[in-house]
Image 1 (tube, helix red, strand yellow):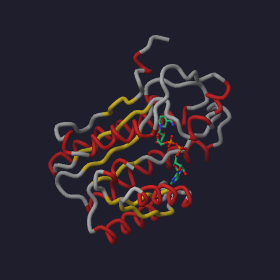
Image 2 (tube, helix red, strand yellow; image 1 turned 45 degrees about the vertical axis):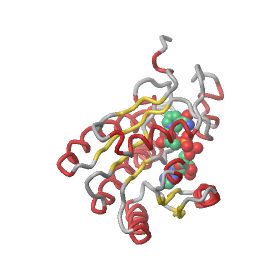
Image 3 (cartoon, protein in one colour; image 1 turned 90 degrees about the horizontal axis):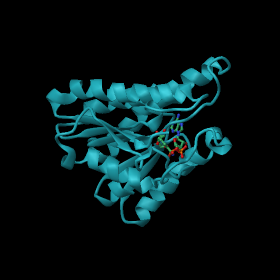
Image 4 (cartoon, helix red, strand yellow; image 1 turned 30 degrees about the vertical axis):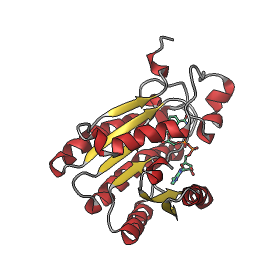
Length: 222
Ligand SMILES: NC(=O)c1ccc[n+]([C@@H]2O[C@H](COP(=O)([O-])OP(=O)(O)OC[C@H]3O[C@@H](n4cnc5c(N)ncnc54)[C@H](O)[C@@H]3O)[C@@H](O)[C@H]2O)c1
């Protein structure tokens, strides 16, 4: 919503088209411009189709926000190989695909913002697949930022703490109390503010960085 209210023309891509359309409708109701796309962001061909749709609609790409992600739970001893690698493909593969295929349509001054998690730094049992994907996203962000420096394209990440979305409330570790919700719970708008900052020229001297957006959660001793 914030990016659209600041004049961005968006493609909202999601596996769940109805969810993407709900976001697009809210943007349109507020006077913004957005189109919805159904896509599995862990699928190369699907990502390439979204990129093509963005370029066909708007002519170029200024910002890519890699936000979609999923969680699979289970100890390493038991988790299915498909669930482990499926998590990596959705969460990390999507960053790779959108970076690789979006890049050709992005000029100097454009930016990538990848969404990591505090799970890159501190986690709980049975979330290794998700935590690994988020740690890898931050390493990807640093390395890709170096590759993009000569082109004046910035690559950064945000690492959210607890945010009031279905992912938080559906998390079985949160439901069971294994992962305690300490401190304030963020709103999606709190993340949007940080993402829009990293997407904008206000952060022109920042690249390869991950901004912790967690309401101070990781600052606290256990
Ligand atoms: N909510 C939190 O507390 C929290 C904390 C840390 C990080 N994050 C991160 O924030 C980002 C946004 O998560 P959220 O909280 O809105 O979660 P959410 O589960 O509410 O939304 C995730 C969205 O991703 C979509 N998605 C899942 N797999 C997909 C795929 N293969 N292709 C396309 N779309 C797919 C889902 O349909 C859903 O709309 C994620 O990267 C998540 O890891 C969230």
